Image: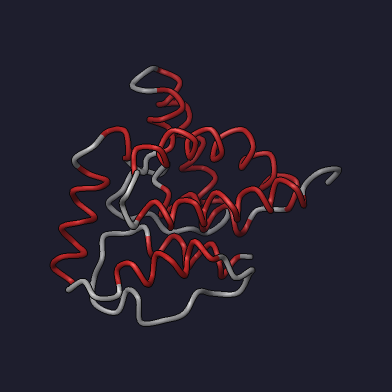
Length: 163
């Protein structure tokens, strides 16, 4: 599912030219991802960028930094960020301007982890954060994309049982 998580991560970065020019990567076909692509297909790049900023950067409830949803501004978030940076380095995921716990970093790392580690991370960190983010996106096309992430993470958790 590495390619699939890489595709999801690309769609969760600030939009630029060519962002939706490729079909989803390898992995299961998810109706939520198709629904997201359809919902934003007619938007100009500028409109998509505005939607992204309004959705994820103007609302703390919908921010894509999963540590924020797990710990808020508590000390534990700092520890989580350090562990995420180590995880990114271990799995060869390049960082961008976003914090290491941003979904655009987390998803590629998740796709590279061993099955048991990925299942545990999805269960302990990703699923609880998504349960907070998704309701904040009611009626927003990005809700489809985050539901696709949630479905892919659930598949990982199910596959990791007994791993």
